Length: 434
Image 1 (tube, one colour):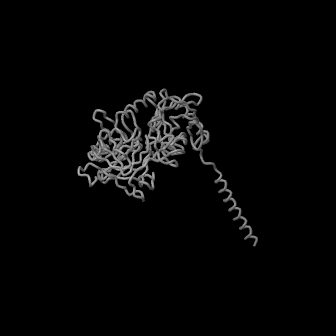
Image 2: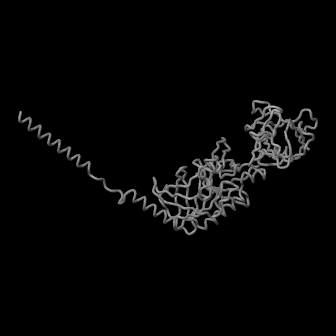
Image 3: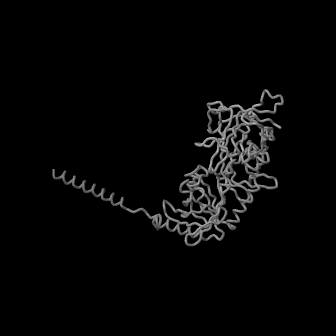
């Protein structure tokens, strides 16, 4: 019995020894990968970033993309970083009537907050326009263009390119050391944009889309009709459509992400074409709808059963497949859309005056119901009773449950609008081509 006890005690001691040895080995510290703590490394990186930002003689060019899906494309922003945490900024503007190409001052700060972060702390229009919740641009009031004014360093620093990620959008952007004054760079971008195609300049030339190849693939590229730096690229074979945001450069455009291996397209003003290093060409494409659209341009005699006499009006081109009807009354323009599929024009509800008072052209069942609901209205049809074939009556387009036969100028919660020179009800209108 004593022998068994001694043996058991010996085994217990051996077990305890092994356990103690195992515990001792678990407490061994792994070799250090860094000589400094994570906090120390971040602080060192923050100082390095500050040194880089303030060291550029000509400032930096930020390829700025507001919104997480790059819905509005990218915009050039010039930045100069100085002492006392002061930064100067200029930029392209995604809003045509807001100028942001004058140097504006802002405070900036580099901090360690889940990474090394560059933050612009005081309001500067070039920087904060896209993120200002008081502006009703883009997605509307409270959102604007959903842009960023705080950026996190997303890749290791290099002398000439710094990669930043928007804190809110998580969109990665490039900050490039400027080789010329940042304002001069922006001016050269704006100069090229004034010469290159936009959706607006193209429709005036009766063009629609850029046709050719990108990455040797046959495509048609449709530029944003709202003027944003984006396009939709449609493959000729198969019809696949891809949304392509881009940023303008002094020589052309740079795509946010490569399309068929192509990132940069260079503008040739002599030939009015874009080309790629791979030999691709994109040229303006004649608008296939334009011949039909022109049919309705010109002078008309407009009459309504509520008028004592007809009025001469004109159909002018307002945008692609959109007419501006002028001459009804001073200051009043009504828009009509051309429907190429059915070869007719259509007049639907719309705002004809904005500002202190918003006036709608409302769909109306004469003497009865009215609505300013979007898309309600009528389309044109040749009057079968007119032997000339030049008179058009308007027919309800079926978008509203009621049978629309007229229009009325209306102010919500107030009633008829008479500010264009008296009561202007449009009861059963007709248009006769002159």
